[in-house]
Length: 311
Image 1 (cartoon, rainbow, N blue to C red):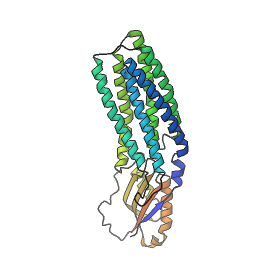
Image 2: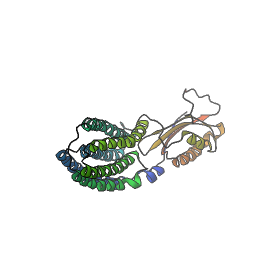
Image 3: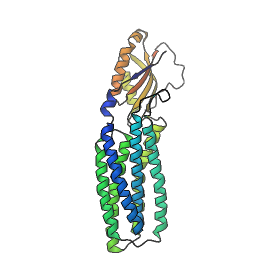
């Protein structure tokens, strides 16, 4: 049987974030956070504050994440060609995975330094630490706000939002530690705050890493229920059964599906109508690219992976 490769772009246009709107948000975020990284790093080195340097390193990784995410979005808009028949959409998944991996690697180094310094705390200026971190709250909160309305539409935007929201909370923690250090001279608190920051980052980043890894190895997107999709396709008039149901992500916004559609002999000539119905149903399930192969009920499927994923 021949394959039918059908594309529907209606859902993609409705739900995929607009590049023009995000381009501005990413650029503003990159400029603000780059400036803050420089300030925080200079003060952190001058004061010997590990919590400020930890936060500066985290913010630097966020700047890299924002830049990579912006690059990925631009690449995802490049037209498909003979060598890359889907274009560069998948770069958004790769960037999301790389960002999460880099962040987790960076905090390992930070955690080690915090533990080593715990027994030998440095004298610190609590007020300086608090004021610098206070500026960070404003910058991170504003940057997070830029991505808030689009955060559920794309994994990279969600990652950017999470990083900035977490950074705002982390900066709040550094402010509190700076005030406490000023009044108590508990210099060891700087290392404690660094370790708390590390734990917060791990918690926020681990799920992003797992989601990105799942998409990178063609796993079913987290929000997608295979059994629900299967049952929805079976509701279409003329469909007797479904074989070879595979769902994966083309990018952090586009999902694809392939399936063998079992039909009766007398409906073969009207398969176009069945396809149109199936495409319409899939649009509402956030699947914008679909490939169907008709299979008659009298045929015996000879391929070995005919089972759909277990529910």
